[in-house]
Image 1 (cartoon, rainbow, N blue to C red):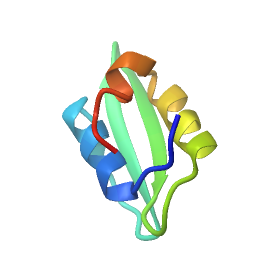
Image 2 (image 1 turned 45 degrees about the vertical axis):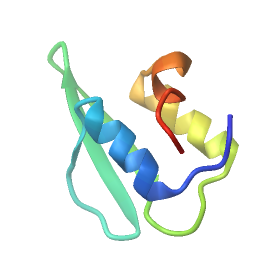
Image 3 (image 1 turned 135 degrees about the vertical axis):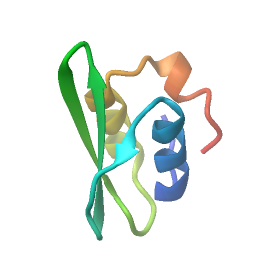
Length: 72
C-alpha cells in the first residue's frame, strides 16, 4: 500500500473499465459487472493516503496484484 495522486488512481480505474460519472471534488467512477453496478468515489484533490487507496481498491473489487501493478 502506498499514497497516490488522484489522477493516477483514476487512470488505473479507467484502464480496468470504469468510467467517470460526475462529481467535482470527488469523482464518481462506475462499472457494470455481471448486471450489477459497481460505484467508486475518488477525491480529486491533494494526495490520497494509503488506507484510502486500499479502500478504493476493495470497493472496486480489484485484486492487489492488478491494482498495485499500475504505477502510482
